[in-house]
Image (cartoon, rainbow, N blue to C red; front, side):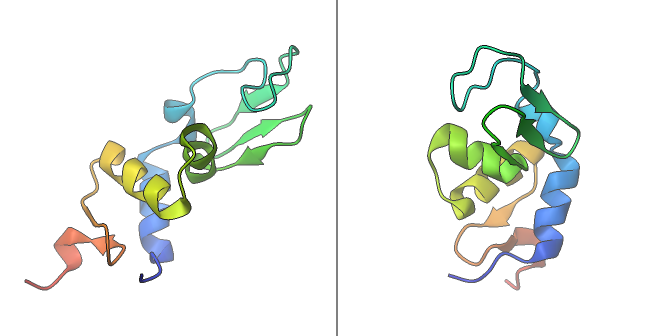
Length: 96
C-alpha cells in the first residue's frame, strides 16, 4: 500500500476538526475516569488523567478499533474528500 501524502492528511484535518467528531469535554471515554479530565481542542484531544491524546485520526482509531488507513478513509468520507482507498490519494488527482 502507498503512503498517504501528508498534504492529504492536512487537508482532511482542516476539513474535519476533531471537535466536530468528538464534540465534548467530559470524563475520559478511553480509561473510564470520573473526573472531567478529557478535553477536546480544535486540533487534538487530551486526557489530563490517563495521558491519552491525539488528533482526529487517533480518535477514530481508538473509538472504532481500526487502523490508521481505515481512520483516514472514514474521516475523508465524513469531510467529503474522495479518496482512492488503495493508493491513498485523492480521486480527483488520479489519472483515468
